[in-house]
Length: 78
Image 1 (cartoon, one colour):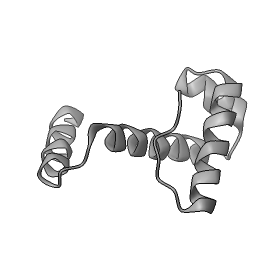
Image 2 (tube, helix red, strand yellow):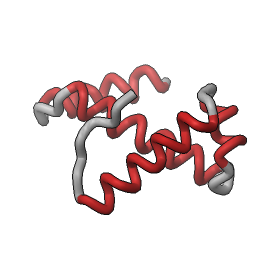
Image 3 (cartoon, helix red, strand yellow):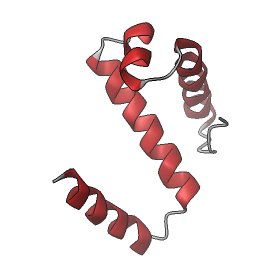
């Protein structure tokens, strides 16, 4: 089921000429935001669920917040 939903979304993105870097960046940002909301903004719990280190999550969240303040949508460095 999720495979079909992703395929449909990808088709829409390709038709809209969304670049791969932008698609990956937006997916990651939204995925992390949703996971943080689900775990009440608790970084350690969220990082564990995502399978990444807490420091990595913290850095990415800080980058997203900086981008939002600057109105910048550049890809997040990994």
